[in-house]
Amino acid sequence: MDGIETVSIIGLGAIGSAYSARISETIPVGGIRVIASGKRAERYRSGGVEVNGRRYFFRVCEPGRSESPADLLIFAVKSYDLREAIADAEGHVGPDTVILSLLNGITSERIIAGAYGSGKVLRSFVIGVDATRASCSTVYSTLGSIIFGEERNAPGELSPDVRRVAEFLGRARVNYEIPDDMRFALWKKFMINVGLNQVSAVLRAPYGVMRRVPEALELVRGAMDEVVNIAPSEGVCLTERDRESCFPILDGLSPSGKTSMLQDIEARRPTEVGIFGGAVVELGLKHKKPVPVNTVLTQIIRAIESSYTK
Image (cartoon, rainbow, N blue to C red):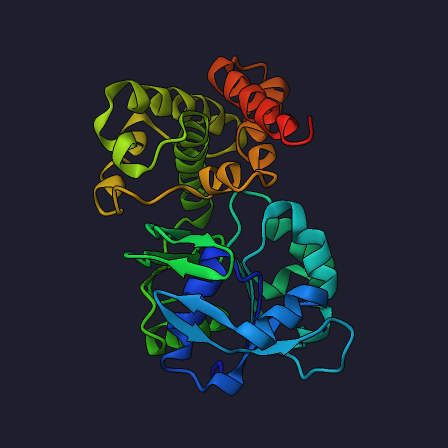
């Protein structure tokens, strides 16, 4: 099995465009393919995508047209667009394609594996990136890291697909980590998102406010605590120490940076509250655990979304 030379990406939001730009610095532009259709495809062809003041023109591939399979397929869409994205990307998946899902939440890999097979999908997520996007322009000061791997990654015994992706990311100068326990790592990121994304969206607060306002941090802790309380019932051992270890991440983010959910609220777009607070509420019902903070945050965010059309 050869190294990764061709990359297909679906989703050029803040995360997708930031990583596409970084990858293009070391990978020939012909090896990067952006999957898009309709007006979005036309916009990418005519105007490209701007990242940190530089404009990039990637090869645009429309769904349904014949393409050779990609060595690596990256999903960077919103959770509510995932099933459509799976159908659009089908022509880019072959026997040796490896798939990374940079979506938020804890369910996207299972959904993708249901369409393409579990052997192709590595568990993955992004942490520490402060990219923000408006129209066709993305700005970031910290690109963070891609965390990925099989469910278990024993040191010195990494799977061939994990080794291929690690070699590729190293070549592309993208920071990455391969945890021993990927399921635990995903739940820890889920806990961070449940706290930071939702509270920032309700307060309309960038990272700087979240760092310096004690009441905001207490709300974040309250939402995270409910994930800590539920996790053991799902076979994941999260603790208060794990919760507290998340807060130093804020120190490395731009004070003016905004969570993806806050960006969605400000742009009057649908949010991913269903895979954050909504998921916590569902798990609370399943395991008979009280989740009052996430219940209220979810209701507020859904009320804000409903106000868009009223």
